[in-house]
Amino acid sequence: MPLAPVNDSVGIDALTLDPYPIYRQMRATTPVVRVTSVGRTFLTKAAYTKMVKDDPETFSSDDPNTPMKPAFQAHTLMRKDGAEHRRERMAMQMAYTPKVIKQNWADIYRELTDRYLDSLPRGETVDLFGALCGPVAADILTQILGLGDADADTMQRWSQQLIDGAGNFGWRPEPFAVSDRANAEMNAHFDSLIDYHKANPNASAFAIMLNAKDPIPKSQIYANLKIAIGGGINEPRDALATLIYGLLTNPDQLEEVKRQEAWGQTFEEGVRWVAPIQASSRLVKEDCQIGGFDIPKGDTVMTIQASANRDEDVFENGEDFVVFRDKNPHQAFGSGPHHCAGAHVARRTVGEIMLPALFERFPHMTMPDPQAVKWRGFGFRGPINLPVTLN
Amino acid sequence: MVKVTYIAADGTTTTVEGEAFSNVMQTALDNDVAGIVGECGGSMMCATCHCYVDEAWQGKTGARNDGEDDMLDCAAGEVKPNSRLSCQITLTPDLDGLVVHLPEAQY
Ligand code: FES
Image (cartoon, rainbow over all chains, first blue to last red; front, side, top):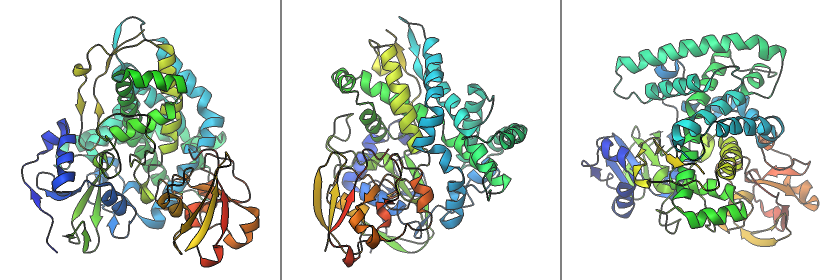
């Protein structure tokens, strides 16, 4: 079979600004395509992205030679497969279960959310992205992980510095210098909390990992915490911002959502419509075929779940925000062994707590100028501002 | 083909024909049976495919697989002695007629 066609024209800037028309075009004409500017083979159909993620033997996450390693100063579970990955993941998974959230944290999350809502000025236009979405997500994560008094600004800064390092595919020294400093700060902070968590076993991820019968090494505990910091703030932040935008720009749906209290369904639609994590990479371990094209061993394929989530074969009117769909089998949380460990947490916190609390507090809020909202991101995506008039 | 009956929390009963050696999660998805999400595709990483094996069938479906217990703890619904992750139940021919009950919610 032939190799997949090459796309020389699409650049990273266009993908960052608005990838969706590009993906629609790709789905229609070149669903498997080698994108020169990114150096990856893009897979834009739902069937392909799912197939790749469900087959870790052929499509491996184990790629120690990405900038993630220097950025996190560790070979993390995100980039491992098989038993090693499972062991490190299950070491913290109990902290992220629906039952633990319900029993231990739901009230605390409500309080945290209320505290931020209390601070918002009624009647004024506020950028909810900075004033609510980011800080609430960060504070909640601090609790889940058991990170003591780490404040929202610090958590968000660490998170961004890790992400910037991990995305430093140009291998420039500065982003690694910044992530090195963040690692030093995080390590010192984690060190200071160990005695407390050992003396006071609790349901936080840190305590669960430390107090396990057969604990994973401390270096991997720290790596797991950093993965959670890097991957557990921007995603709920972006999901919440996307949801608010989707509802405020579709007032009819908003009314119906309120009437039915369909917040969970709204959450699913928001993350389908604009998946916070849009694309992932897998290393091809053996020669194979996808969609009628040869994919050689050693190639890196990119599953574009952003595109899979709008695939015409699966979704009607996929480009639109439509809460009340019959079915919504999106891939926003991925599939396979690396299915998002925080999926339950995100559904509970963003979908069941933050979103309804916000709309209850400000039932008449409006978005004065939807055009003013800017969206950014290729690997990760969401609004980067969200001016809303609170009423 | 292997017959499987899914009984939803509200009592809705759906019987479908599954392919031999597929699994109970995949068979539900292939036949549009509501109530099983199976978001991780059977990798035992999501616990959104939780089901309760009907008592009459418990002996036949066998014991939980390695690691299944831990993942069941991550399920949204109550875990009972007959709880299984449906992606871990392979449809062997002797399961023809299998009945499983579904929890109210998978997440
Ligand atoms: S499908 Fe995810 S655990 Fe069964």
